[in-house]
Image 1 (cartoon, chains in turn blue, brown):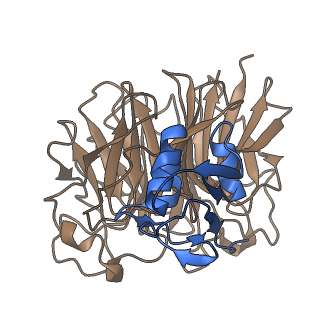
Image 2 (spheres, rainbow over the protein chains, first blue to last red; image 1 turned 30 degrees about the vertical axis):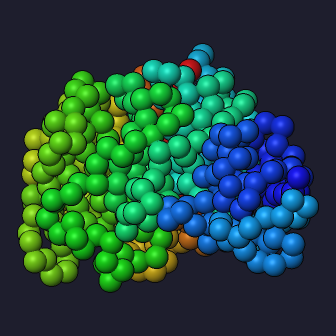
Length: 87
Length: 357
């Protein structure tokens, strides 16, 4: 199972969502779809029309920046980072 | 005495200011996880609070609470123009509830509807075919922060009849539930060239008298205006006001001649003139105006009030409220004659709505 680490602002939006979740999915997009099954509406928070990752959402797979089509290995670490900005 | 609940949507979430006597107020918040909010309303029919949110990171969503703000859920299911559309959806800016449905006004100029209490949405209209529709998303005509559909207003007596404001472009009316639309800008002024006199007017806020649906008022980018025929035509009533510019407006719940506005300097500042906070009132449908300042700061008070920033309830002695873009909320229980500050240090305020429960 791959590990996915989520940004803190996502956690209060979905019951029992935790900062670290496990997925068994071939790509980032599939992983997000899988999490959307468990937490309906999850995908909308990270993905906009296109489909594409939202502009200030960054995904790293094993420390390399990726997109929805980026493959995920069985033991990958996926970090979802909300861009640091604002005030 | 029933509870007065003032919903204050801010750049950092929702705040609920409540009182059982309209003298002593308490504040709850920030709610909606401090998401940036553009508008919050109370749907009396369902007892639900709705809030339109647009996070730069997590997108648009409508928050809802069926227990007066104690617990919240959010959804954006269906709030999209589709993967293949050129229309972008970064912002939802206005809400209205009525006839068992919720309307959501969105960027790129679309109206979405929900008939299941805000759980799912579907696109109702993008006003296709209206004059100059192809210019609405032209960046030359759309400064940063464009709201798209900045207001919808539903006729409480007719589910097919409602209005929509396209920010910076026009007021439109539908009488067949958005199958067709008609511009309703006759008599409005534009201080810029128009290639089609039917459209191109900057309507900031539209209000309608609860006791006479033919009487409407609007605060426009250029002037205050009154309609005596349900928006079919407009007459300017700016004379006597210190500025023709402003955003917010409120109409008296029992007297169709009485109406409140907050004039602002029209330049980039868009704050109250001369640093003196004031609400202006007419009691004769705009023939004369009174400046109301008692209890409001009169020195160095460069306050702004946005288009949904003023609200009035339907009590016998109506409660009148406004919130500023610097986080103050003021209330008057005597027709605007005197004011008191009921919140002083909130985040910048996008909208104020009031419900008496």
